[in-house]
Length: 332
Image (cartoon, rainbow, N blue to C red; front, top):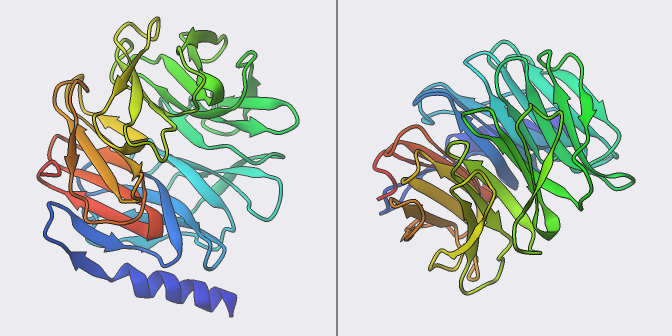
């Protein structure tokens, strides 16, 4: 009965469209579920993952036609999927926690999502982000309540995982790699660490704040952006560096948007999504490297978790209530 209910929820909602007077096309994928992460490898092929509390199952969906249709994959896994890293048309990794037990699991597909095989299990919840630099080298970041922050690494495509020592700090919430292979991780109490040797050693950086750092994005090894937990603020801020993290500048967006996720196409053009003090699906855009931000109309009342753009016009945003937004005009 539970399996039937889960299938009905996914199948009935997946065909629903709503077109609003905005530059975005709307698609609700699943009732009672949230999309936590999405990634596209081109204009046609993309994945999104999350969790549906309504039926207690993880969400793994894939499109091969630019989001016009989404196909549910392996939704019988009772995992709150937090992050996906897509390497190519066939290979991807996802990480998530089992809401009913103290455990984090990593899954891998080698066949475009037809099958997802467990790659790792760790006896602690709280792993929030996974990234892969190539088919073999990948990282996941999270927290173990008994020992603190954790970074795990694989160098054989997920066959084995080992721990990296992030050094002394609080909790780690996210990580990213620059196109040059430099890795950055961020967390609570303004904690920033950086590795230039693929995770063997980590160097702590001075953020200049004790605020929680929610997400990080680097355009290259010098220019990066970090979101702050500004939930409920009338004016929100972020951190920016242009020297690889040696110095970070706390900068106002000029908006009330609490940023959950950044995506930059280059040093100038970038998008950020999240929530606001009036609980709206918030989207902001910059074309001058964050000196100024323009608030875009989303037409959505739920928070937004993730953003991914293929080029300056073609992009996807997803979040609460299983909502996925698509634009082919740069959101304007």
